[in-house]
Amino acid sequence: MAINSVWVFAQVTNGVATTGTLELLTKARSLSSNVTAILGGDASGVAAQLGEFGATKVYATGDLAGKLPGVAVSGAMKAIIDGGDKPDLILFPQNYEGRDVLSRLSVKLNKSVLTNSIDVAVDGDAVNATTPIFGGNTLVTTTFTGEGPYLVAFRPKSFAAEASGGAPAAIAAASVPDLGATGGAKVTAVHVEETTGPKLDEASVVVSGGRGLGEADKYAMVEELAKLLKGAPGASRAIVDAGWVPYSYQVGQTGKVVKPSVYIAAGISGATQHMVGMKGAKNIIAINKDKEAPIFGIADLGIVGDVHKVLPKLIEALKGR
Amino acid sequence: MNVIVCVKQIPDPALPGALDGATNTLKRDGKLILDDSDAYGVEMALQLVDAAGGGEVSIISMAPNGETAGMRTALAMGAAKGILVSDPALQGSDALTTAKILAAAVQRLGGADLIIAATESSDGYTGTVPEQMAEVLGLPSVTFAKKVKIDGGVLKADRQTEEGYDEVECALPALISVTAGVVEPRYPSFKGIMAAKSKPVEEVTASDLGVTPAGWAGAGQKVTLVAQAEARQAGEIVEDDGESFGKIVAFLENLKVI
Image 1 (cartoon, rainbow over the protein chains, first blue to last red):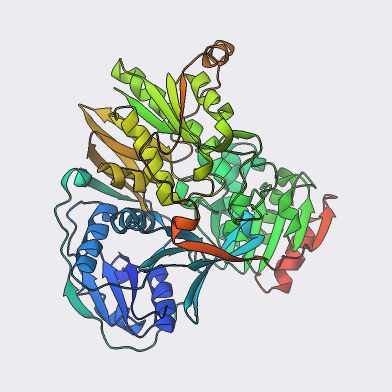
Image 2 (image 1 turned 90 degrees about the vertical axis):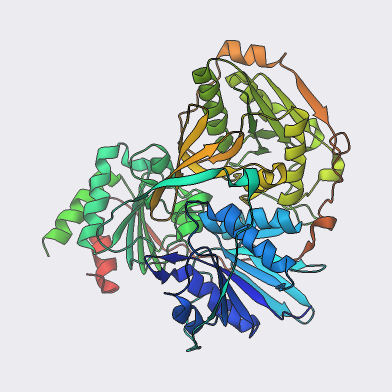
């Protein structure tokens, strides 16, 4: 079927639309000239930005007053669809809120979902989404059948965000219906974890540490090296689970997807879950004791050695420059 | 306090995955084990029931061929009983059908004060089933909980966000998905392993639960192409001789990073 109308679940942080939102809008406008953003919050500050990247209209719920976006925004979407404005395709970011809204809406509409996708294309009457599996070794193309809306979530950085210079999106109010028991969860406090230096998913150099560091204290070497290279420190799931560093440091399937110019993996074996998040790096350097470690299969430069010996010397050498 | 934990029995992640030739969905017909990420939910449930001073932990799972090996691990940790949904008609079910089935299994157990799942499975990782279940059951939910306690009949959780975390309060009954590392899962004791062998696991089909399985054909999507991604070539691998840091310096210089 042809795509007449595409929706994008939009997110705003610190008063601006997230990069992920702009990526999806860029893709959406390549599929249809009728692109609508749906926002859980107030749109007055971002309507111009959303329009610049392709949205002609934005539905906004206004302040959610502590309601979780999963139930609230999906409820608003369902009400709009029931009211007669029905899209053929809805694009979601593969992140915490995106997944929640997508999941709730799929039940409300009784429609299947496709997650972790990296592309979507219209080919004649077919709408095809591309999804990597087995750590990205295999690409699966799924064709949607039956009537829309088709629901798809995309990994970060699947598309490049490019402004089209469109006019500000027209703001329309979306109301959140009575959520009944499902609205029983409320946000009572918001905590922002402060980080210094470049953001992990935007840094041109990322240095990540893993279980091979041996103990939490040794992570300081990773931070020092990252600082010397004006990069951001990252981590494998293993040491995040172990509580050495906060979750926000995690690179991988369930953490951040990074595409830096240089990625240095220190003491990381290269579990699929990690590689999914960093194999898009332009250059990969890996240091690991085990020469059979999967990470060496994708490294441009691999050092088979002890991170406790290699990193201090590398740090000294860089300091001396 | 009664808690139900959704557990998935998956092919050993150490072995390479494969697709079913007919439907191009994940093959799950070999030996299955308890998904590592579900051990956290089982542990969380045991601790909450313990703190409440009464009640029990039940587990529910959906797997082909009557497989219970992974469920026995959860029972050995201390769960009391389980329901296994095993039905050839469910093979290749999408996340929405899975959520409907598991929600029906929750109802068969008479519901619970709390339902716990992992944030996503380690094999299919669609990551939508917990929140879909909550919607099917009409329950509130807190996903990506990394700290959980029950205080005066109210669930209090720290929920992971892009920028940090939110403190969330939620009325019970509710459903939560917990991140790996939320608690440290116990190892089953020998006594626990022996006891697990005689704990009841009821095996049911989709029709026992009153759910019509849509299967992959009814999912509104079909896999039309499977292709190999362009492989990333390995580069130069060297053994550290005490001077290999120089290789890294030269590599970075060459890229003009330093």
